[in-house]
Amino acid sequence: MGVREHFGQGRLAFEPSRAIFINCPFDNEFAPLFDAIVFSVACCGFIPRSALESGTVAESRMDRIVRAIFSSKYSIHDLSRCRGEGSEQLARFNMPLELGIAMARRYMSTKKGDRHDWLLLVPDGHVYVKFLSDLAAWDPKSHDGKVESVVPRVVSWLATRPDTVRAPSPQDVLAALPEFQAARVKLQAQWGSDLPWADLVLAAIDISQQMG
Amino acid sequence: MSRQDPGKIFLSYSAADKKVAVRLRQELERQGVILFWPDDSAKSDTELRGTIEEAIRSADAVLVLVGPRGEADDWQRFTWRAALETVWEDPAKPIVPILIGDAKIPTFVYSAGIPFQTVRIDNPLDLGGAARVVAEFLSPSPRLAGTRSSTGHEERTRSRDSGRSGGPKQGAFSVEADEIISGGGNPPTKDSPGMTGRARSIPADIEAERTARLSEIRRYAESLKARG
Image (tube, rainbow over all chains, first blue to last red; front, side, top):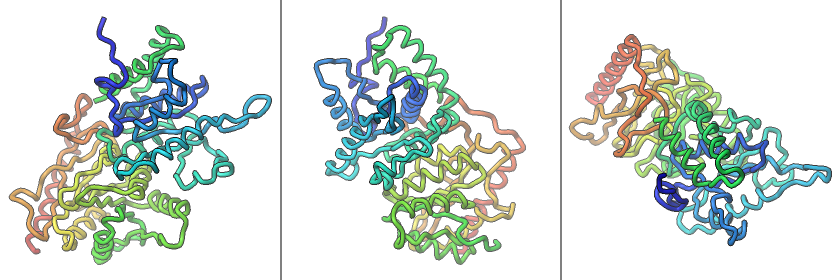
């Protein structure tokens, strides 16, 4: 059995200019898109980070999120769940809150090259402009809820960041995505709901590097 | 070349390179190439963004000016992103990097997955020759119509040295275009000098046509430089 690779070390070292905090829904419906975003990030040579990356229960969720955002130069936010749900038609606002934290990180940066940058994803026809009109100036990109529409959005953004060293085409990412999805299923079977984030990211890195 | 429709060529540049962009625009106009030039004073950012996106979508080609420091600002990155998404949908749309000094080809160009040719400007005060070459790149004439081939987005041209051997001359420019490599995404680096694992062979007829065209482009560029 090999030595376990941990987050923050080796291939998973926390280098802010390579780190992308992913602030997207964790539910089953969004899972294919979540996987596609994680894999796209790895394919472009960045390290995906998440609130899931620390398994410790000694640290509050908000502490983990703030720490991850503040040690990542980039973040990706999807506001798909900002809509009424359930019998009470309540919307979930964790994601706009985390987007706000990312925005704060941008304005707190004193060095221009260190400024936080983010990609905002919204579903087609989303009414975000009605409830969060200030975001319209930040060029939100819409998708139709399918991986074929999300991957180009993510890759085009990543390919044009100043720290990008590798930029595959969306077709290349989509072609390799099933392999990553299969790896995730295998890991899920081994770990259940406690799948270590590091293992998922390493699977994404390994498969993306086979793309050439 | 015959004059094309006004505004059908988009020039991407950063605020830091605006002076060079304005001069290049003037030189290109002398060659009959009319650029889309947004009125950025009258619109909100959101409206301007929409106008630019539409201009890139409907453009026949996108010129990408990169300054010597290579620092694109947020607006230029926005145009890169729009250009990339447009080219993915329409691989027939050329992207022409125009590099000032030692500027590097932006990584996103490699992600476009299409052949491209690069013009390098050694003296930003002398843009006439570079503008003539760009005009030829964009010409509908088959003589210098570029290296686009029937294999479409599976190929691209990677820039390498061509006219720069012996060192750049003051006031000179060079055309950089030679080998086609396939697959997507990785600009050459010290650690990874090129694509690995996914190279595909280029059909012989396309390779021969490409080689002939590139030789012609180089001869044309050299003749322009010789004429000063």
